[in-house]
Length: 313
Image (tube, rainbow, N blue to C red; front, side):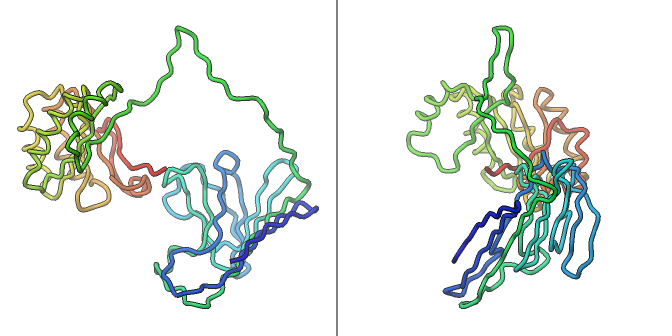
């Protein structure tokens, strides 16, 4: 694999990769990704040039786009500043753009190969990858101000910084010293102790009672995530009956076992049951997958205290 980055005096930067597969393997994507920062791009007009010499007047999405805003991208052209435009050209594969905020990254991403093609696909031994991306500035380069000052955060005695509550999750496999470890962790000051309860498992209630005891050692309220199936109503009723002290619970999150996002019919049925029993707990629902699954669902979250989705650093 050979990679080159070349800067030219006419405000042009040329990226190129050349490589040959030394063995046969499966791949999803092989090649360049270009990240477009949200602050500088969101809401701006952009012209998309397609493979077959057609053009499309579009906008970088301001709000998180459910699906790929740009497909079959041969080039992109937009205004960077009042006196400077950007031309970004692609070759060597079919490129498209996704809103990376769906996966909790603060950018848009133009990548290859398009998701419409089946994957993983076979990259055969001897196949050559040759891609180029060319970035050029039109109308004069933009001078960026260099910031040398350090960032400082100061507070007075009367000010408080608001930070999210931080909890810890129950280990799936606990060591012999688990209770001693909890005693040590109790000094940290965790807000809550998360336990995942899969309601279709026969021993779910024993896991729940163990977690209740452990939360007392940790000195943290419970955050219980209920994974329910098509019998969610009956399962939530059983869960509610298992508690004598609902004040020990800070949050209850209901997630589906066999789908990506909870459906409104299930939510409408179980919410009154939880509200009636756990009047002091925050009640949430959503997905155990990425925000994109929540974004593409029709979840009616108006009666929830919060929505749930995963974040991957």
